[in-house]
Length: 123
Image 1 (tube, helix red, strand yellow):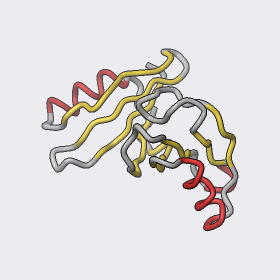
Image 2: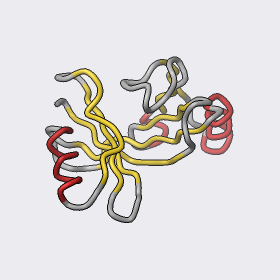
Image 3: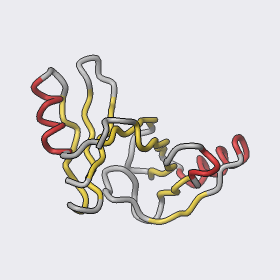
Image 4: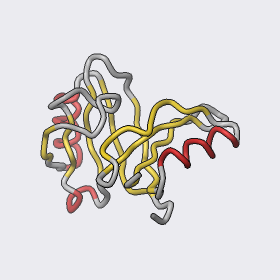
């Protein structure tokens, strides 16, 4: 992967309300289903934004057990290795790698200032 931003997420405690909000605000439409990790969104609560509408792959999800946040995901070849490097440089792993190797694996870390960043890749 090229270390480019490949996905964005808007996560909240009332995901259906958030999807309605952004549908009204930006005209976004969604394919609602599951996410690759329950640490990202509760089952059945993740709405993938139609990329032709948003201009970038993204989703709106969450649930009552999750904290509200907005984040982006950087595409990497190996999520575990990238998380290790982030930690070695002073960041902190939040979770991951999690997902289905060979299909989609995700993880999240905070940088030295506490900003949450996502990673996504095949491994």
